[in-house]
Image (cartoon, rainbow, N blue to C red; front, side, top):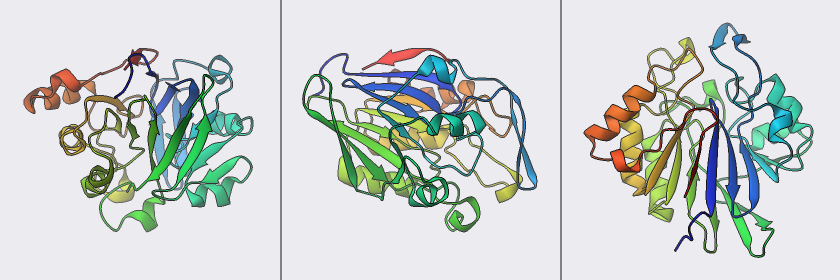
Length: 259
């Protein structure tokens, strides 16, 4: 059973979050660039707000969890500079091939162990994710999710840019119930995949929470970019409609929650 105050998540805006997992310092999807337009092939993604903390304010962490490297809303120029200073980055195998350096590709269901400052260990396990509808991976590229586990620590799911409830069901078969789910939401859409959603909609996030039997849900990556079709208001409404309002922890950039 999880002990009180053993896991803290601080939203930095967009997909970025600073985690304290039993003393292990973790940064999820570093994005530090200012608002503006960012070219991705023939597309332009518009960032509408900057991060709650700068890279210097975040400082050193034990590990970076990078869902994928190919889109600037998950890894921008400032994030790439931050990776150059990181001791270890866990991501996809294709990110390891492209970025090299401290990046280690973590295959699905494979774990990396970390020593905790006050004794014991924590595990980060790679999880399946799909950044769009079935068959979209050749277009959108490889992405990954993560699971955090440890003795006397809550089980924490980090979805990354996953839009597939089938992948969530695979994860639930092995690991449910999940104590805390960090779900990338927002119902992202770009011309790359037409009307298809590239991340979870608000309704799909509530279904994911139910599938995972999640005790708490912290949405990430539903704001600060113009290609999101839904925001915080829709998340609140969807969780209320599903009778899950008590599980939703909607953080503004800079805010923290401890579990």
